[in-house]
Image 1 (cartoon, rainbow, N blue to C red):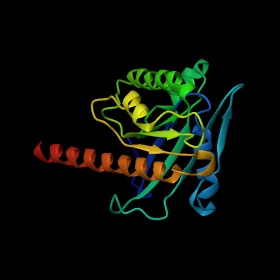
Image 2 (spheres, rainbow, N blue to C red):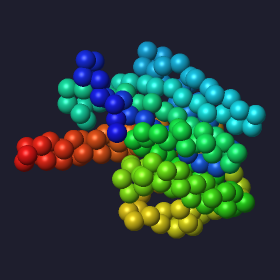
Image 3 (spheres, one colour):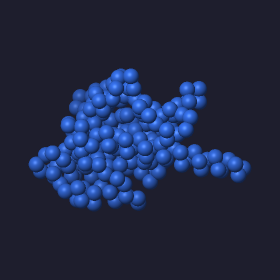
Length: 207
């Protein structure tokens, strides 16, 4: 659930980039942090492990009228891809409001994509949450490489939940699809908050 700061009239949303090792999670975050104007973003924080990194920074959009009277702040996180850091992955998912699952488009990485997606669902279950209730989308990254799977195949493999979700093709090293991914998941998280808040208000009015 987003954190609402009534004093600052600010709502903070937590967005997590999830996926297998070396799929492009870190590249997404680093590109965004470089491209977002300095006055709109916080410092990049890095938690380094022996084989992977967890990155975090927050930012305020240039303009957002989705939630009237409030400013929306977005906190972006990556998770370690290596399986040995699963406890860190689980901790990063605490209180998540939106998820970007970054999949590596190379044929040889399809098994790792599937394993990581299953791991995401299992880690959410530890908080008694599912993908049915959390806004998320798929990013098919590394589309510039020669040995990539067709998007139809990747969509069929990963997009089998109760409600099918959007996917974005990307080349994170060049910034292709990176902002589209971010804009989409941020809008989805805000829309879910507005929907939940409306339902909560309606329930309270009946009491």
